[in-house]
Amino acid sequence: MSEVIKTEPFVMNIGPQHPSTHGVFRVKVTVDGEKITDAEMIIGYLHRSMEKLAEERTYTQNIPFTDRTDYLSSMSNNLGYCLAVEKLGNLSVPPRGQAIRVIMAELQRLASHCMGAGAFANDTGAWQTPVMWFNRERERILDIFEMTSGARLTCNYMRIGGVAFELRTGFEDAVRQLLPRLRQTIADGQELLAENEIFIVRARDVAVVSPEMAIGASLTGPMLRGSGVAWDIRKADPYSGYEKYDFQIPIGYKGDAYDRFTVRLEEMRQSIKIVEQALDDLPGGPHSTEVPLAFRPPSGEAYARIESPRGELGYYLVSDGGPSPFRFHIRPPSLINLSVFKEMTVGGSIADAIVALGSVDIVVGEIDR
Amino acid sequence: MGTRWWTATEVAESAMKLVPDSVSRVEESACYVVPDKLVEVMSSLRDDASTNFVHLSNLCAADYWNRFEVVYHVQSLEKNCIATVKVEIVDRESPVLPSVTSVWHGAWLQECEAYDLYGIRFEGHPNLSRILLWEGYPGWPLRKDFLAMPGGLQPGLNEFAGTAPKPEPPVHTVE
Image (cartoon, rainbow over all chains, first blue to last red):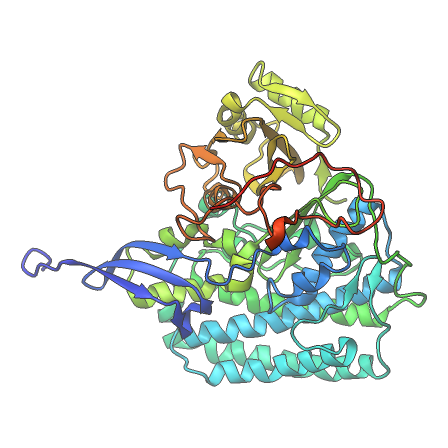
């Protein structure tokens, strides 16, 4: 057939202003008919030079910047940064502060995966309805964040040495009322999306990443686990008391877009388990240690990483003994997970490229920083 | 329990055993590898069964006024350990380093970022280009001598008393 009908290679832009690119992200694809022969991603539309700005501000003043990198999981970003500063300054966090951090980070993972799963359903053609189901529950989690920190998206809740405020009265009841609803939503998502024939046809065997490729390309998070590599920093390198909680690492076996989606759904179930355990034995005592506002860690460097909803989120800090970091580097999981974007898309159709991008679950604020 | 961090001495010993004369110096924070032998060292650290650093966790550059450092955090998923390897670049005018994209595909975008913000050219990179800024942007923004603010102000918290002494930066103007 291809010998009869000849087509010219055609260059087409997807984005930067397109609903399926999840932000200002642009892909220049070369297509031969419907088949993609080359894909080049163009980023940088949201670059705010946070790493440079952070060198001019104190360690505490940098916490709001980390909110604005991955704006769908600000609590996780706060946590990663605070852990890096605490490692640099040899600070410890009281047990209650650690437990509150774990609760917040896991609620944030639930909120972020709600968005990721809903938006992915959108990309596969389940237009808007699943997004609304998932967003309904995400809004309730954001209500809890608002109740605790005063903000919904950019929470700015963690501090060096603990968290900013004590939990409000009624926090525990609000979370305990929310968790069964979330379980129901995940079950609905499992039943109506993951077991739906159209969805399976759309996502199975699309954008396959082999385990070897995933490790070589430094993939982390659901991308790596979807390929069947059981690597989770909460298990491998526990921080903030994760070793006390009982949970499992879900993995996929084919490494395609469908596996990444189901890994996210299962991770949400595990997160609910962790939140319940943390609420059950929430220790008393102070929520934070006293740290001076213009905190000066000793000269040195530290690299601390956490398992953010998107993967390994690392902060590399260098201190020269002053009140501001000498070097502030973020290891962005979204950017590095896109290393295999070309390999995932070339050979497929444009519609599959949209599914591939949706399965990575990018946040452009983190890619560009 | 937890990931084991290799000390700089351990990394240096392994690197010297795999590739002779590849370590230039060892400090508390990391072991410094000779730039010419970087790719050889990295690929043997990845392939050797005793090290098995198959996953490049983080790659970034840092500017220390008189030199650049490129930092590699490499980890082994099976053995659950992580090591820090550094390379030093003294030439500030045209910093060049061999690319490790042949060892880890994941270095691709991170090397592009280091080139974009520090101007370090990674030789052997398949498509080294600016990714966050546009081609033709004047200067390399994360270098310490890049004028971040109007009026010739230097980055840093100079108004805070007790700031660690910094060497006098060379004055650069940006066209």
